[in-house]
Image (tube, rainbow, N blue to C red):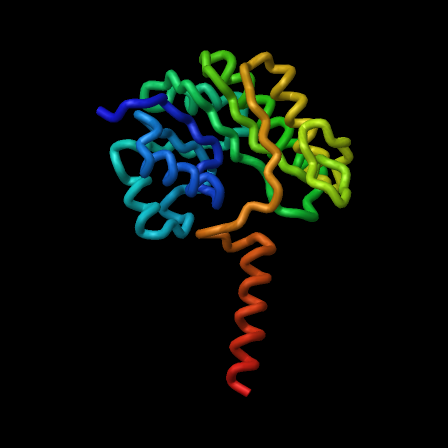
Length: 206
């Protein structure tokens, strides 16, 4: 049996989640990884390496709407429960949605999951927020920087951070800037790269 903590990754089928799960598995950092997501791995366009990891004995999957209080206990009890670390990557990430979408799928989701993590005795709840909560400026932001969320997602994420803190669960909040890399198909970075490659290719054909 693998050594290490039992880890629950909420929203683990998405771009960041699948890469985190792969990292934990390849580096043998967990004895068990459970992924909870609305999206099934079979429909998520995982690459061959990711499929092998998700289908291994190390990883189990629970399909769930994490913004539903009535079903959240089933997620935390899945496959033996007792998760020491809970990492929340589940959130609405598409822009131009109505406020209700962000309230339910960012604020309420984080509140419900943090409360469940406390109830089930998690050692640490890691809330993945966004650097968009900081005021824009020429210098890099740190934890002491002025907070001035400038998108609806950022405003909801800041409220979600407060909900996590108020839950009483031991927690860490991380605020990454733009994340890009393998399997990213929806962010701005692959579009910029594709545009640059296309421009260079067209020029080379002239």
